[in-house]
Length: 183
Length: 183
Image 1 (tube, chains in turn green, orange):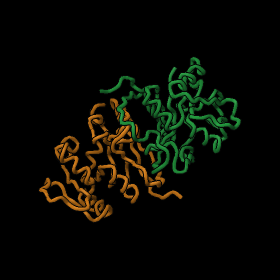
Image 2 (cartoon, chains in turn blue, green):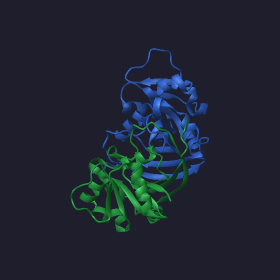
Image 3 (cartoon, one colour):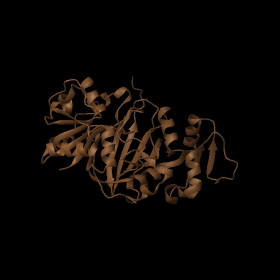
Image 4 (cartoon, chains in turn blue, purple):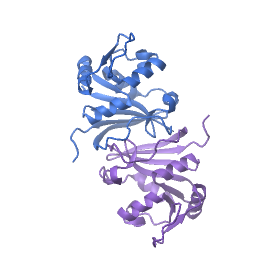
C-alpha cells in the first residue's frame, strides 16, 4: 500500500488559483481514466486543515471529494481539532505527520492513502513518507495561488516516471518517489 | 514565425536549482528529439541579463547554448549593456520587451525566436508576446531555485497542448499560448 499525492495542477504549478479558485481545474475536460483509477485505489485520505476549511466552505465537505465517488474515511492533520460537529467520516489528528500517515494507512488496510493539499504533500515528501505523485496538468497558467510544491525545502528528491497520458486538455503524469537520499 | 519559451524544468517548476545548479537537468538522459527539433527552428534567441551572466560564468558563454549546436545570434535584454567586450554573436537591447522581441524576430527571418530565462519568459507571457512553451520535465523535485513561472502575475492564460512525449527520464510537453484574454 502506498501514499499518493493526487492533484490537478496548472502548468505553472498551482493546485488552486488566486482566492483559492478551482474553476480552472474543471474547465478542461472530465476527470481522466487515471484520476478514476487512482481514486479507486484509495482506502483512506489524509488532508491538511486548510483543505478541510475550504472543503467545508466551498465543496460540500467530504461529500465533495471526487464528486461524491469516494466513500472512505478522511483524516485531517491539524494542531487543534475544531469544536464544531464535523462530518462523521472525518477524524482529526494532532500528533504529527508520521502518526497521521500511519493512522490513515491502518484505516486503508490493503488499499492506498490519498494525500490532499500543498503543505501536507510537501511535509510527506520531506519526511520520506510519500510513495507516489499523480498529477493531472491543466493547460493554463494561473500566475498566482496555492503552489503544490512551494519554496523552502531545498531538498533534492529523485522521481521515477511511471506513466504519461493525455485526456482532453489534461495531461496525466505519474511518478514514484525514489526514497534514497541524494548526497 | 513564433516565439518559443524552451526549458528543461523540474517537476516542481524550477529551471535552475539552489545556487543556480543545472546538473540535475543533464542527469536524466540526453536531450530529446523535441529539444533538437526546437533548437533547429530557432533563427535567434533572446535572453535576460541574469541568463547572460550565468552563461558567461558557467556555461562557456553563447558557445554553450544547446551544447554548441546553436550558431545564431543571441539578444540580451538588459537595462544597461556591460562595458566588457562580449562575444560578437551577442547584441544587448535596452529599450523594452516589445522592441527586444521585434528585433530578435527580425534577425530570425522566417525562423523562430527562442526565449531563455524565467523573468524574460514571464514578461513575454504577460505582454502576450509568447506563442509557444516547450518543456522537458525532469523527474526530480528541487525544493528551491529559480522558478520558470514565479508568483505575482495573477493573470489567467489559457494554453492548448500540442504534444506530449517521453524520452528516457524526461517528459516533453509542448503548448501553444491562447492569445485571447480571459474575462
